[in-house]
Amino acid sequence: MTIKELREKRANLINQAGELLKKAEGESRNLSAEENTQWEKLHADADGLKTQYERMERQADMESELRQSAGRATEPQADTPEHSADQYREVFGKWMSRGMNGLSSDQRSVLAANRGQIEERAAMTVPDASGGYLVADELVKKIESAMLPYAGIRNTRATIIRTNGGNDLIMPTCNDTSNSGAILAEANDAAEVDFVFGSKTLHAYTYTSKVIRASIEFLRDSSVANIEDWIAGKLGERIGRATGAHFITGDANSKPEGLAHASTLGVTAADDVDITYTELVDLEHSVNPAYRMVGEWLLADGALKGIKKLKDGEGRPLWVPGVAVREPDTILGHRFAVDMNIPTPATTAIPVYFGDFSKFHIRDVGGMTLLRLTERYAEYLQVGFLMFSRHDSLLLDAGTHPIKHIAMA
Image 1: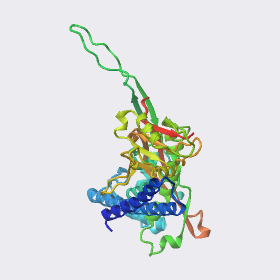
Image 2 (image 1 turned 90 degrees about the vertical axis):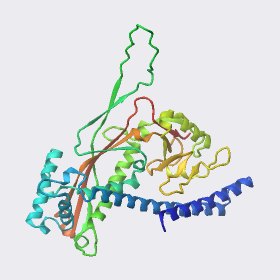
Image 3 (image 1 turned 60 degrees about the horizontal axis):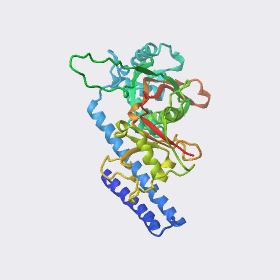
């Protein structure tokens, strides 16, 4: 099926679920147990279709990006005057599957040249026995893609900053909202009102994937089409789980500043489980119009489930599925993303955020380092892989509170 057909099929399922709600509402009752089971199945099938066409759209985007780059490297660390990025990626893949003993002297020189860049960029020496090398550029993209499902905030308009080095980044802030211009009388001097600047700092906290083991048979089995993809997926999932949790819950104490710590209370819900239509509208309008115009929602999956059953005062659903190709689903006309690190509605929980997510900055430091542990698990005929990458996050809030949240009673 095409993307358009999948979207139309999903919209049909959602309409069927809506008819169940409309029927129960017309009869002034709640859904029966059988109707609720049917409603749950319709939405589960609709979610499955959404996953399918979003995967197809993401693949199309990646293929388009590759065509535009025409095979050129996008990260300077994977290219040297002596060795091209394509050559490095090829040798890097062989090193992952066979180790140094499986490389020719020329191929070893390609990795050796790249080791020098690790030492220069990270100001540290990676022991030869550990076999540490900068992750190839295409593998980095696969790892970043694998992070997405575990850090839903990356699916918002959050600002992603990618740097080669890990030095602190000073992010300036300025709140000039209390100042305005004035009429100037003839022959009078203009008054002086200076800007007042502040700043926040993006650091680079080191995350480890922990060791991933793979059998030598698996690594060398000719039936394995691309060992790099398999390893990239596993590494990305682990790093994604760790960073994704901190992007929401981090307290900025030797870890990233998370959204729960940095955002501002907009609405306190009257209930400890259910969120109402009025509370969502109040949250939306608690955010300054300058931010509300580009506002979007970030919420728990449990919160989304409840919102799918809500309607406005005219009986129209708050949640509207996107039907056209690449058209996003919306809540109150604003796009949304789900983050599994956000708690489901419960006593004192913060399940819903709204605002301008471009003010939330995520830093990814390039030059991910991968270690191949050959000897450590030799007695098991296994090889260990261990990756390190550096990340941080913060909300750039100069006092105007671009993102606010609902707190449950």
